[in-house]
Structures are given as structure tokens and as C-alpha cells.
Length: 135
Image (cartoon, rainbow, N blue to C red; front, side):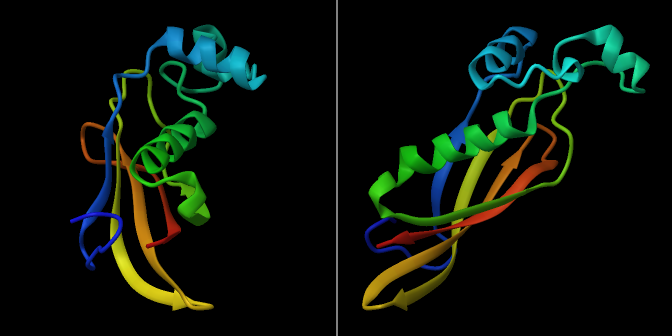
């Protein structure tokens, strides 16, 4: 199976990431400019009713984007859309996957629609979406 001649059901995207740490969240705060204390201040998170800080949703989306571009050249990506499904807790070890859901043609270009997910180590979907790629 390859991104050049996929079949429905083929897994084209698969990447595992190390557990999300406090250090990673702090780095992401600096890199993204998103300094919401819910992601780095345990006292703030507890006051808000959470047991601990949790990941930025956009960090999870970045992981999924990285997994996609590791598997498919960015020049072949025609669209990407996602939706947040659940909070990603500190310590989550994410696995990002994409499988071929549909083969299609648009303006003479062969394409594949990929069903994308980012799941934690328990299998809970944290982010779901789809991408359309040229094949």
C-alpha cells in the first residue's frame, strides 16, 4: 500500500508520539503564544474543576498535521479539516492515523479522502477529521 495507488481501507498515516509532558506544554505555550493557564498552572486548572492541566487542542492538531505531512508530501494535500472530540490529558501518548475512506476524481486529478484520528493510549479519540490528497 502506498500513497500513490491506495485502496479503500489502507492506512496511509501512522505516527506515535511520546507522552505529553508539562515541559512540552510549556514549550508549546511559548511557540504558539497561547498562554492560557489551564494548560500550565495546576492550581488554576484545579480551580476550574480539572484534576490537572491538559493539552492545548491545537497541539494535538499539530501532531495530526505532522503525521499527515510525514506520510504525504504537503504539495499533495488538497484539504484538511478536524474537530475536537475530547480533552487530551497530561501524560497522553497519542497515535495519529489516517485511512483511505474514499477514492475520487476532481478536475481530472485522482484523489483520496482520508479519515484521520488522534487517539490516546486507551483508544479514546481526541481529534477526528479528514484530508483530501492527490494520488
